[in-house]
Length: 204
Image (tube, rainbow, N blue to C red; front, side):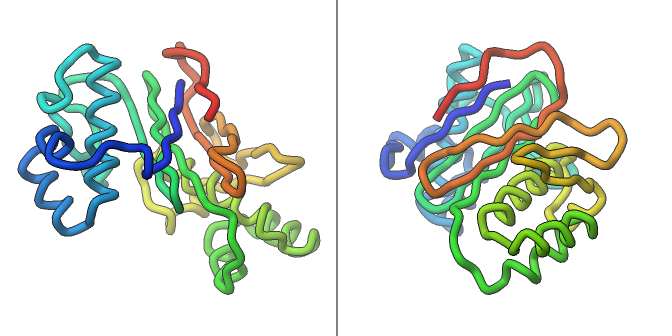
């Protein structure tokens, strides 16, 4: 398992990036904006580099639940972005990644009730309902559901407890979950099936 973090401001933009995308991706880029274009072009470049193939030739498709995948490769990957940063995780088994900018939000308690196991929610509230712990749990929940190719509102199907900065899953056959710091003021989590590693994790 390995991961890479990028600042959007440092990623190339323009016609050269557009040339890497398929017609469908260009249509989505027109609707979703320049960050989608930069993220998708970066994904193609990085996967092309790892597989020693031209980025524009990679047959990117989608699973039934909408998760991007390579049609002719066993390589697994997942992307996340928040604020000024983008993260890409790559593995030779299922992987999910999420990053979040830690920020005050009035929706924290409402969202926590949607994603946290009742025991985790009670412990979080007893500890003062800190934004840092909330966003760590949010990242872990997102990483777990993306690993399973599900959506965030399925998070309670993958319950866990946050304990001293580590995740203890409460369901069978759970993947490994690892926290990392994409940049100051951000948190991140990767959920991955333990397998033969492609390489050691890249430090952002």
